[in-house]
Image (tube, rainbow, N blue to C red):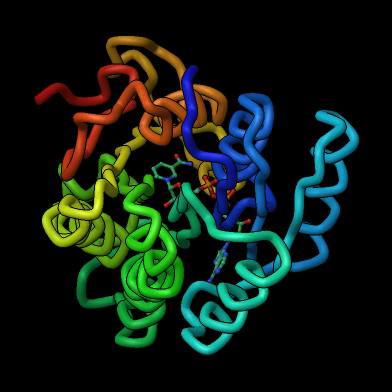
Length: 245
Ligand SMILES: NC(=O)c1ccc[n+]([C@@H]2O[C@H](COP(=O)([O-])OP(=O)(O)OC[C@H]3O[C@@H](n4cnc5c(N)ncnc54)[C@H](O)[C@@H]3O)[C@@H](O)[C@H]2O)c1
């Protein structure tokens, strides 16, 4: 793939889909910064990628829902590494399906703080240098549940991911004049810690298997590449035909 971007930051990059995206972008030659609420695991994975690709890969402990921590991380990263060209807003949490009246207010607020406000915090903290450079790529992690309303997940999660899609459109309109592309991807069921306990009838999918984290990483890298330069404000499905629009 062709990349003008030199440096990428992935939130929630210590495992699962985020780690696969970090690995793919490192393989494509970008300097990658892994951030995660789990600082030690992010550091361990950054070291692993540095050794694997013989290229410096950094890590910073960053809880996306903590605005002060995100702002401090952004200042530190700019000072010690330089501006971030690609921001992958991947961090997210999910609660299992339950009756609407069993979802606590605490759950609603926690999911919203991490899955939606977390993205806002990160974009506010990292978009400044992109605007100055008149170049940037923002990739947001939505979910098929944002379209379906959720199959085996809580309404709190489905609603948060529908919010991500709307947020993506809003950001695309705000930042397009600065040559910043903002897109989302919408995975179906991907094998990761998040879906470890999930049982699902695979025969209902056109491609009857769970997706791999690398499937999502390939699409995320494409959205961050020069090859997707006329794509913005869109949400791309990657779901093996779980549903078709
Ligand atoms: N796995 C799937 O089937 C699937 C499907 C659709 C969308 N997604 C989305 O993809 C993203 C990654 O999912 P995954 O399957 O890799 O999950 P995962 O649970 O394996 O990984 C999530 C990562 O995010 C980190 N994280 C959690 N809260 C955080 C916070 N407040 N700040 C920073 N980091 C935080 C975790 O420590 C973890 O490393 C999520 O946004 C998820 O909603 C996953």
